[in-house]
Amino acid sequence: MKKDLLLTFFAEFIILITGLLVYKFAANLVGKDAFSQYALCRRTISFIFPALVMGLGVGIPRYIAYASSDSEHQHPDKYFLAGISVLFTSVIFFILLLNLFREPFAFLFFGNSEYAGFILPISLMIIGLTLNTACYSYYRGKLLMGKANTLQIINSGIIPVLAFLIQKDIIHILTLTGLFWIFTSTSSLIMILKNLKWDKSKSLTPAIKELLSYGIQRVPGDFGMAALISLPAIITAHLAGIKEAGYVAFGITILHMTGSVFAPIGLVFLPKASQLIASKDIGKLKEYIRKLASITLLLTLAGLIIFEIFADGIINIYLGEAFADIVAVARIIMLGCLAYAFYVSMRSILDAYYFKAVNTLNITISLAFFLAGSLMVYILNGSYVILVSLFVAALYTLGILTLFDILKLFRAK
Image (cartoon, rainbow, N blue to C red; front, side):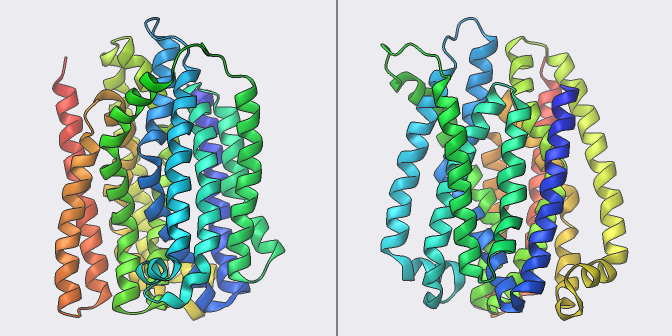
């Protein structure tokens, strides 16, 4: 497990660095308006995508891991085939819908139907992400983290930077990113399919039902989390304009990158925790949780203090003096990193331990809190800074609820 963790940390570190480079390119090479457009497009995709995946990004590796370690299950590869059948059906239907109603969707996401030209690039990126998710989920379930991390480095690290180096127009950059994702992920999928082993005489329907019974109850949670981290920027686009929305989207991206520091633990720990639960080794599971929670909170607190003190200098060096307005927004948003990092590090444990989607309930409560406050801000035509503060409060609501569920797990025998 240590080797898998180190490989995954390395991959996520590369992705973090290249993610920072991408936003610097957006600020320096394609201008200030394009920076906001790029940031908002990436937040929009993050908002849409989890609902399309239907919890299968967690369900596929979980069931493959169970089937690989439990003698009662046979042919773990059937869960992969069942999963991609559902994934591709869902995404194809939505992409057709998205492009048939380009202008209404553009108004919904960007606050102006004139941005309809971004719908096709967004569609290509969603297709590429779906293919990537399918392959990555298979590798995670098999604990082939070397292959999983290689795929992530290429798709999430190298390709976005490469698109900026080849193109200068923001729509072309997004389009090229989507096309590259489709090519690399399709290549991986073909290699996976060639090596699958399952009983071809048996229907995939039982496996599809198992995955959907586990995954669908997590859709509201996945969609709710995507909404929670995307709606502040989307609502700001309607409340203040696309420039301010881009600033909020960037601040949330920095927050998301902070969470990604701890994502490797969850990525490796979901299948590992599933195996521990299947073998009823709950004592060892609790030991992992204690260490993980301590490391997460200490590192995040240190990072938060450093950012709050040096935010002016960091953003000035990173984006330039023209983006000084982002500093105040980023400082407020980053106050939520303690709660967000704790949730990120613990969510896979709760998904592995409980068949019931406890994360979904916690996210739903947190999102409802944010939406209720946002409605008041919108009706009263309040400042988007208040909206951002509500977002931080919603993150702490999620963190506290997650802590309660972890404590319940510790009381279990």
